[in-house]
Image (tube, rainbow, N blue to C red):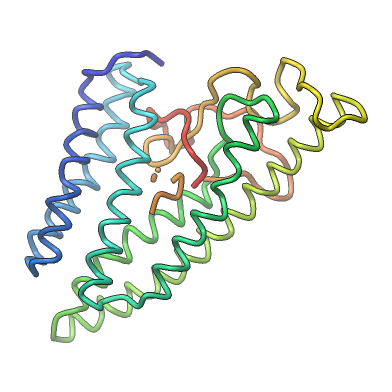
Length: 255
């Protein structure tokens, strides 16, 4: 992983970020098909930047930030646009925002325990994000008339319900892993839980005092938002690597 900024994958990520305000304006203005075109571009570039990062050996630290940021911003923009047009109810927005608020304390807790990064990504978090990214375009199409719009609306709500469930399940798994790491830290520091955490990796957790590889859409983002993962509850994850899908992602906030 390098510190380079101007790489081909990063340029694609910058293009995705620039598309967020354009997408929101198109949704609010009722140009739904153009808005869907922007989403298609965002999805393709999200897949392509990870492929190029591997093929060109251009995995970068900046890419680990841009990719989940773009995921969350697209979800946030979609929530704003669809709520303003009354395509989705306010309770769905509150449930998703509440999930983000629920995992926000994990980052400072990890830092207090002596970890510089965040938790390793898990496919459940990524699956929840992908369900939501499928749900919102379908719900947008479902706001029209015709049998195809009805079918899109039904499919969109199916993806939305699964996405919300997986999103919250991911949050529970993140907290379970955080509790495991906190207990391991207490065991290492003795009776004083506030004592300084020793250097070195904790068992099956992110490395301490170092950069922690993580992942989201390019890993295999939110952290989330609403990008581009979480550890299983039954057994702790091994130290994180580049994601299962081979994206260029590294550290990020929990998803």
